[in-house]
Image (cartoon, rainbow, N blue to C red; front, side, top):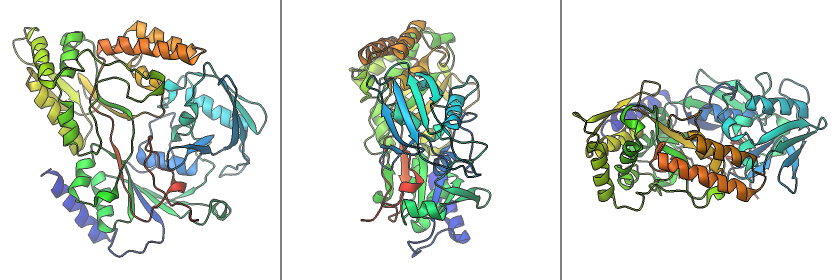
Length: 485
């Protein structure tokens, strides 16, 4: 923490000198949002992943068929209503009358084309791996769109609500906000008068910035009027160092993947016993406690607890052992390699003091079993890559498809076959059985070293009465201030 405080102190001083926030500031005027990341861009999610500033922007100026409200529940967006067939295979959406920002009515044909593009061969949309259940997307009329699935998906609407599936055409969306530049790192968001009246008087102007975590925290600490979103465990020590009131922190109850994947199937890491030893050696409880994130619990399974499609997710055979016994077995497995020098591993970790803390625990615990670890930057040659991703829906497939043979160095064609069978299964029970098979196979392989759940946090000023924690860490602009009775 000693290296964090000087950085934060410098940012706080800069914020004060620039007059970016101040004590006694009025509770009216634009909502200032500092999203941790680069400058917000109305980017095409099929070409590159959206960071928090761009995801917030896309969610404000473009809509999908449905959207999340502040609590993470599904509500209408471009679709004013929808009907799900009794067998769960057909979703029929009726579009509301919507206009493109640049003019012209939004049609079902345009929406269908945008959704098909997300599924296209060249698409890099982060949701593409879990959209394979879609068999067809067809406009029925100008106002009606039908999506046909290969098998029932109870949480399909959760996928459609994410900014990655917002409908954008020629660099423009359908609102509810309109954007205007506000400096090199920000945009100003306003609702046209007619839409603002329809949404209610509590739909204020928003000033959205994308910036480093230290400056975002400094803005908040300077006056507590700035909403900070997009926080991860990597930035949490910066926010904790500011000694802010506990009530200012909002932690989203997210699930997902937080741990290490193997970058190659070569050398000692080709041996499942070595991968198992690396996973066993880590004291997850100590790591979770050190992160200072409330409610964070250790995790040993590939699939997060609570996923409905896999109620009894597999756990590794060592999961019930006490930590001392795990570590002793791990040390024996490494010793059995007969190496003349300690096994040396390169671990690609993101930047940020919280990620450095995580790496320090990994390095310490692995040294105890005869393994040396060195930290490298993401994208550099590495033996293990760190993953910190939030699950976009309550889907077992999202977790398991990270470890298919086209996505992971450690895989098994039998698990791939089970996942394909699950995708095509006509009945939920058959689908769940195939997931259980894939989960059991992959757990025995150890393609991933899970540590805990991901951490997502925000700093929330008191005026934002509509801000709610939710399982997807999505916080729509229109829901920041609650409606008054």
